Image (cartoon, rainbow, N blue to C red; front, side, top):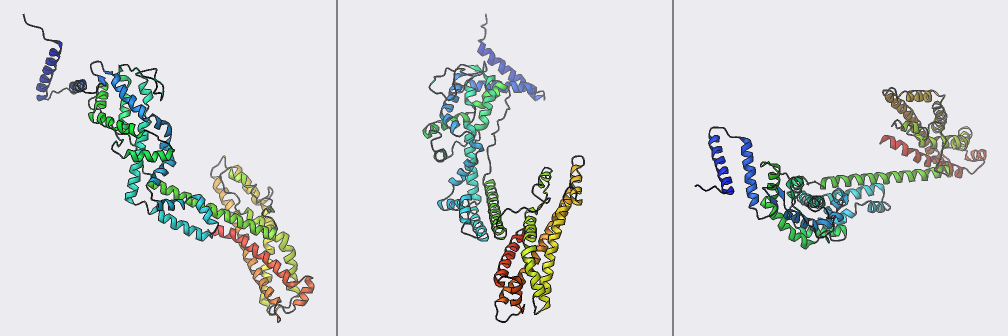
Length: 522
């Protein structure tokens, strides 16, 4: 009576016969891809059954406590770093720290010279031009440090660090809780009791783990990296000895392919591939660009602050205060309605406030009285000089009247004010009206600037003649006005002091207006 084959022997025979017939069929072009796939999955199961790692049971597709213990020991090593490096991947501070760790003492000094605090402090002792040139030289010196080799070193170091951060941020706790529901997060006083579980429960987790483990450079100089991280966080983010013991284990598990094979077997996909999760990032170019932008913004801020300070200083010299409000309709208050439509509005409000106040409150009074006496009572040696003074003087009176008319035209009842208001009200229904409003505002601002330019030029003319008269009145033999004594009696005040006081205010006023003229030219 023949003996029955043992089960294991029958399996081997079936597999042998199946493989034999499959080879025969393949010779006739009758290979079955699905059968090939199943055969490869069975082979993976066999390999897993012979693996020295007790991570997985192929026959039942179960994940064993051994794989849980592997993840637990890894988790125990990296858990402190999870807390200390929270959000580190998004931290600009960490990037700057990595860059700085590659700089020499001299190079760090250049970096320090480009901080906001250093530049602002330096600016107190330098002119704007000197400050800009000094900062430019510091930037050239500092940025030259980052040649191709240095840039590559820093980018590679940050990529390694980023891959480590991605690795420690893997959700080990979520994975381990599937093996032992009583385990608590980052509590290693509890002795876990891991159960065998279906491989389906953790296949995706293992795949995620592989994607972040694959790009991790386990041969990196981790001692140097952790020393740098200790300096970054002011404490050890991980125990170097524990990590040193873990890395050979990670390398061995990775080289064995055990994790990949488990996932392939569970998912019954022998061709499944695992791609490293991208963690590289070029940080030098963005760092340099960001620093350039920061410095540019800071310099612009310093320019603005100095400009504002100088304007306030000049306004106080002319008016006794920096706050001067004379315009009724061409105002910053009116700009609120334009800002709601993202329009620039009136751009010369401050300049026209100063100009109107000067021409109406001062020029039409004190200067007018003096110039009238000079032109009427003065005996001029050359008529051309008196004519030039007269022309400049009357041009300024015209500007004063023009400013009043200009401002009134922008009132609710004024021609331009009505056009602007009506057009603005239509913009919600007709977006094309925005273009028309912009053009109207441009026309208004161009007219304002034209008055400022005209006033500045004619103030220079008047001021130049008054300066000549200050010199002339002190001469024993007068060359411009021949009868200064008579003019002085008509004015009723010492001539030199009066001319000097008026000239000083004209000088300050011209300087004040030039800020706005220059602004337009730039």
